[in-house]
Image (cartoon, rainbow, N blue to C red; front, side):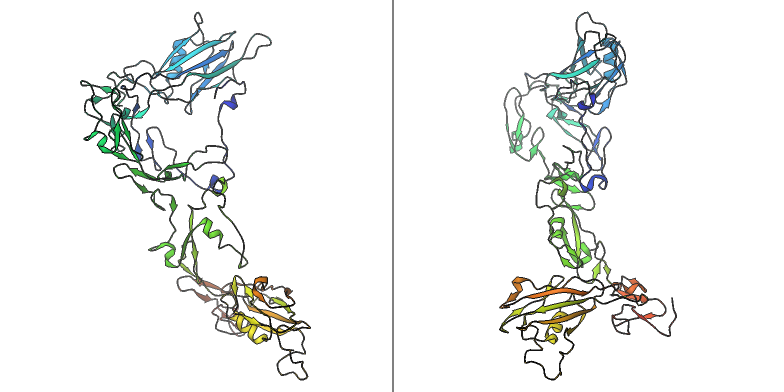
Length: 560
């Protein structure tokens, strides 16, 4: 894209990244010059043009500077020159650009660029505008545009505004191949090991000091490298290039090297605002062994492309006490106050906000275990006996059925009871609820205080859970305590009920339901409460019992 606007900020492609969760939570390495890899441990080898490919051109870019005083800067590949005066000569302008470390240097060439401008002009910028042509002599291929900043330029002529613009004239078409594709790179030393007959060049096919294998030192080439040619993993282009066209997954001058699997990058620069994580080799979280095509992943990552974060836990994932799941699967286990809730995560594979749906893994602990790695045993929970004027949760279940033929199931926190019948009594309902792992104890009574087992003068159906005239019962939660969710009877769990089944909250639970009733320290190695002095195991309702929850306040014990 040409840069021809006086608002120089538009010439910079600045991409914001703030909405995705990882914006300020994931950290990675930004490597210094000459290094790459997820941990910056890999040395980068010189790149260069393959001299046997012909009819290729250097990149040429054009600047126009219209100003009479002030300074400007030019940026290339993220590096910026020192301020350049509008009165700079061609030599001074060239020297300023040559100071950029992103311009490749050659000991046999006095400059990385060739600068020319309008005949007769002696300064970089003029009142009417000077055209400055820059040919890149040592950086090859399709290069990014020089980005000018002329915010400090001035123009002495009234009505004229200062301006410096940039545009491409010739797009570079030479290769910028590692080791000029005539050698292999040592990632340990950052040096090219050239094929027989090839050596370092000056960037133009002559002998030089670039270290790029771009000079044919001996004789001529009449075959592609490798025995057989291209080692059987590609086809030879023939004269005059004699370049191997490698099969997919192979590269290098003789196709000996293997690419590694690709995955969504864990850490990479954004490609658009709030969008990153493009596909990369080893997912940018491992180093590729090009001899075998195998990724060696960073600690904490796994998969053929290092595309998965490992679940914590030793010696097994989740300490053997849970399931390792990705975010999309974990969302299916979402709960609110113990009730399953419908949550989707990563349903849209193109959403930038849930890019990690199938990559980020975590532990879903089995019952009785907790912690990020499921290594901690859970302790009993209960009500704090030292807090007073609190209530158990009481829920009101009302059922109407005309013919006594109906049946239903009750669910609580994702679990369903065995089948209950309209003619069952509170005893069967109590037994069914207490059989659920999500219920520790309930007390159930008929709402009508005159209805109870043993009462005289009752109608034949008085003790049924469902009656033609309607029946209602109170379900009191002894444990768990607190504001628990309503029991539910879904429409799909009612069979033959001619009327309705409704559940409402009669008394909101206000008791605590906390580790060790808040009156002990939890020993997570054993899953046992070490009660403070004056407290011991309770029955869940403040009396002595066997819950192991430290919820009983001893009347004659030490007080805390």
